[in-house]
Length: 110
Length: 116
Image (cartoon, rainbow over all chains, first blue to last red; front, side, top):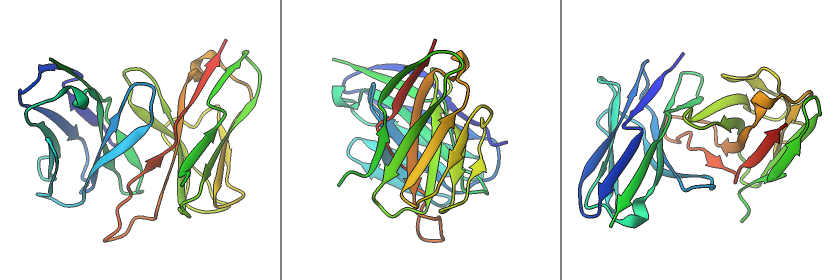
C-alpha cells in the first residue's frame, strides 16, 4: 500500500521567512498533488506535478517533484499571514487513486 | 457553477442508526470518491467510482456502502453507525486520468458526522 509522509506536521514561522515542507512516498509514482485546506473548509488544489523534475510556482509557493527520490517539496518564500492553512500532498497510485499525507499545519506569525 | 455539492453538511446519529450522504457534481466528471478526514490522519479513501453503475473499495471501506446510479450522483451509506465513524466526510470528483489530463480532484465542502 502506498504510504505518504509529510514533515513537519506543524510549522510555525514568522512573516517574511522561508521554509520547506517535505512529502515522501513509499512506492513508484510520477503524479503528485498539493492541496490547501483552511479550517473548517474544503480542500483547494494548489499544484499538479505530473513528471520527474516538474516545478510549479504560484505566488510565494513553489512545488517540485523528484520521482527517483520519491520526494516532493513545497517551498514557501517570504511567508505572509494569508498562507496560514493546512497543506496536504497526495500521491497517485497505479489504480489512479490518491493517497494523502497527514498534512502540515502552517501558522504564520506577524 | 456549483461544482461538488454534499448534503447534509452536519448530522448527529445514535449508534446503530442508518443514514445516507449525497454527493452531486455538475462538471460531468467520470470519477467520484468518498474520503473521510480524521485528526492527524489526513484523508483516507472509503469507496470510489469510475463511472455510472460502478463502485470499488478504497482504503477503509468497512461499515460503508455506496451507489452510483447516475453519473452526477454518488451516495455513501452507513447501515449501522458506530462512534468510530464520527468524522468529516468529503466527496470529490475528477476526469479520467490520461497522458495529458491529470487526476486533479475537486472537493465538496464536507459533511460533519457525529455518532453518539
